[in-house]
Image: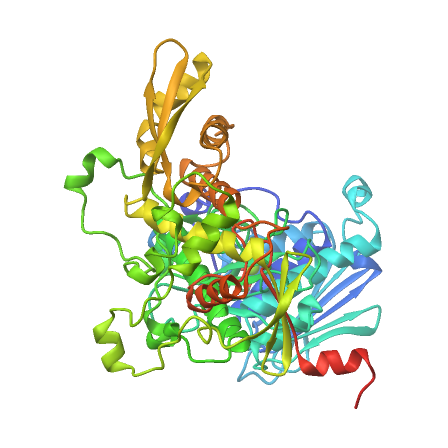
Length: 625
Ligand code: ADP
Ligand code: MG
């Protein structure tokens, strides 16, 4: 009995209509999807003349008998859905029953297929939609579909195509996408009789992605510990922040085995890596989202490039957290690589790590009614660290003096963390051995050179300090506990009407950031307190800068991400600078804090903080054996 039915009209009418055969790559996409739906685990793709002369897809899937081959050429002939109900829970890549008739109408189509259990297969030839020949033939199990002279009857569409090279590029993209979406399947591409890609099924996913991206470094695994049988999870491999891939390297997205484009998913991934990518860089690699089929509508776009999620917000958060967790794990591995001694961090198992909650705007006024705080990545600040910030330091005095003081009060021992200490008796690092590095010295009053094991570590002191301050400010802000410092001499600022309105509109956030601002009559406002961590900056200027950011175009950036920008800006202003000579104790204190921080590898603007040269690499510079 044939498996294919022609959909009843009312159901066919519910299917997103539109042209699917734009270019050779769209043909390859539809045919690959059919082969995958047919359960093939070995797929060969042959292309000649950029796809207009020939596209041939050979699979070892379930095949079709003669009736099926004839039915598959009918519009809305499909074996994948049969009822309205099926349309709401699509688990196959195809469901429209339109690809083969559409392709057939603009090309010469040859289908050779044999299902398991049949001795002979069938060969069908159709020319621009007209059936020419049906015959029995000996052939292996599976299906071969051949498309020749694509757009031969529609010269206008053929003229629309780009160069052979461009079209081949698009075809390769499609195959690469499906090769990642279906890692168990073998894919072979032959272009003009030359094998250009051969990906063996079941090889480690990392290898497949490396081959596809032409990248030799390591990946960050997203969703490493997500149970693969869970209903909803995301898995993926991303290129770590400053790995050497081209800035145009893409992030490939999949949902339930389907390759898609989706701005929400892209955005969520970028949010997960927020503060670790330099401006202009985007996450690269792939993310595969697994969801119950009822929670994603694939009947949105005729070429099925887009989907609609039932709960966009939750999915965004799930992806963001998973990506951020992999960022945290990356920090863990950098930590073990760089800081050779067991640090305080190792007292918590990696599984205990939680993503940082997204910055949301909880008005201070409702503080008493605040729900139980959401899980914070950062444990309540230890007094030792509290004493490291500048909150106890008067605003007067140089930046360096502040920094020095703040770091010198660091590390009274032992720090109170009784449960942790009892459970995990690790050596409590003191100020000088808290990082395990051997400090060589400061270079150009900006870079700290250290020996780590037998390697060399170079640290950008400004970027390093900026990240530490940013995390502190952020966590204080999230908890609504930003340490504020009253100014000995409050300053006045003159505001325009627009600026005055900004102060009014954002008064909650401004207060939450640690500022105290009041009207002083007319256009004059008085700043009487600033965030303690920024105590050494010019208070009036700092406030005006912050105000400017509140006033910046909010069209694209959300309020939350603007606040992150503001916090990053404050951290940048408050951090030790290039040109600041640091005393050995200050260097030690900075390194110790880094060794213990959850996030330390990049400044909040994505600039790397650390560069590590392995001994092997250094030897190579000098041609030493
Ligand atoms: P759809 O995939 O949306 O069902 P198509 O026009 O792409 O529509 O294919 C029509 C039908 O032909 C499919 O439902 C499937 O039953 C059958 N078919 C197409 N390609 C193959 C293949 N490579 N192997 C087995 N069956 C196939
Ligand atoms: Mg199909």
